Length: 295
Image (cartoon, rainbow, N blue to C red):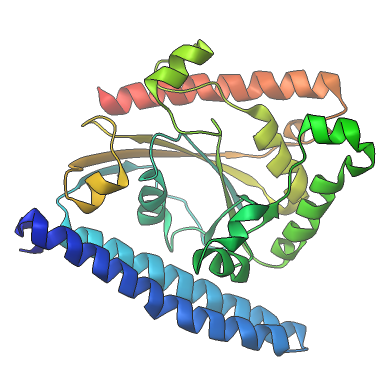
């Protein structure tokens, strides 16, 4: 019924309900965060963390319900069997649109531990969302450019150490860390500029994957590969909200994180070459899976 409403009515209504959902969940999120900051006992702080995650998962759940009510998306998802809420995952996915994030949340919410992303340190200043990400223990990264490190060599390694400290708290609770392997959204122009050897993907950034594995250490045990395909072609958040997105296909596959994937990517040249070869092979498989989803 709601999906059949005229666009000029449906779209503002969806936007309004999404905004109200933000306020409905952010206010108790901040209140519980304040309680957590004031509590001196580790056990009570962990209980607050569990409560914060429950609020975030409820927030995502309401968003998912709104999209179910106001859109007519056909979902084709395989590979959900065997997912666990008490496991630790490194989630690797292709990236075509900002719609990828609500797609991942729709498919994975309450099936694996709450998804967290590595965020640039500047994003903490985004109104409402920045403090919410901080309250939910999203790891914020401060990466230094090669030019900055050349001028200030004393900064070398500080970004990794800061990220390790941010990730240390995940060793006491199940966690899922998300990484878009391409590092940017796919476009035909980027694909051609890169001379990408893949049909549906940009070249992978092996260093980003290695960075997460190094920062998290033994806290991650399983890689969850996610291939996302939109048979109707490229889409945007406005297409999702406007009801123009008709079909989403998702394929998931798990593989263990072996010791061969752990090493010093920055300083060990032999390990870096092996790791890059592994990521390139994984990405070739991902490209073939996306082709199958679209066929």
